[in-house]
Amino acid sequence: MFAMVAVGLAILLPMAVAGTNLAILHQIPEGHVGVYWRGGALLNTISGPGFHLMIPFLTRVEPIQVTIQTDQVMNIPCGTKGGVMLEFAKIEVVNRLRKNYVYETILNFGVHYDKTWIYDKIHHEINQFCSGHTLQEVYIDKFDQIDEMMKEAIQRDCTQYAPGIEIIGVRVTKPTIPHSIARNYEIMEEERTKVLIAVEKQKVAEKEAETLKKRAVTDAEKDAKVSEILMSQRVREKESIKRQQEIENEIFLAREKSLADANFYRVMREADANKLKLTPEFLELKFIEAVGNNSKMFFGEKLPNIVLDQRLLGNYFGPENKKQIS
Image: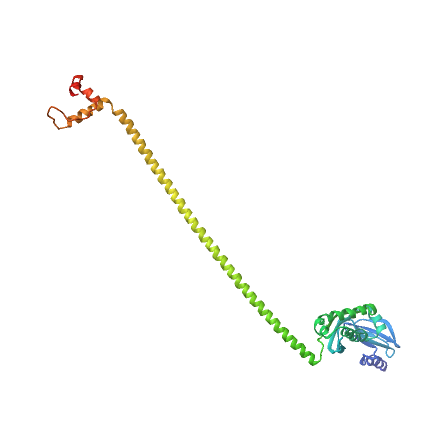
């Protein structure tokens, strides 16, 4: 029983003080790896997440994060090319230590490798940038480029000297400048805003004028198109009336021609009939009928002068009567 209690205490006591060098059993959290020192020398043993055993008092363990992490560098002073002092309140560096470079990085730069290659490096690069640029460039003109410039500068040196460190991104906040200078920038920004507002108003007015012009052109084109359609419609109506009149004229001419042809044919037939009818015998008969129907009587030595068809008289009177009449 005593032996069992002794063994239990030997196991539970180190676990109770886990996280210190006295623990036999220790835990590495997810997203980290464990690195070990024995007698102050870094061991090349790298453990993953979970529970692990080590020799207490002789071995020391540190969990090293190998997932993406964000380091915040605070209160970075710098002086511009013109001598104006600025201060960046916060710069965030998103980085990651590659798992297969953990041993080499910790061996060369220690557990706090990020102080050398991120915190100190940010201070250095920001001061280098400020000293080579004016306040206008740092605060306004090239401020949007600082993020990318810092990222490229840090990654370039890390790639050369600490290849296990990967810089994913850098976020730089607006620097703090002296109040008097900040007020000048505010005034300048107000004036610039007024100019932009005036320009936008001018653009709006020009756009409205252009819209009215386009609307007027559209209305004019629409009216012209309507007039053209109405004119075309009137022309078609006139052409239709003209065509209708031509058809009526053609019908009238055809009818009149038919009537004339019929009348001509009738007259010609009557002429042909009369030609056949007006024989000397028929004429003589008509003459006798006409003379016989005349009720006038003439007395005296001299008869009235009348014109007679000699052919009828020749047929009616003999040669003796002709001589007597003449």
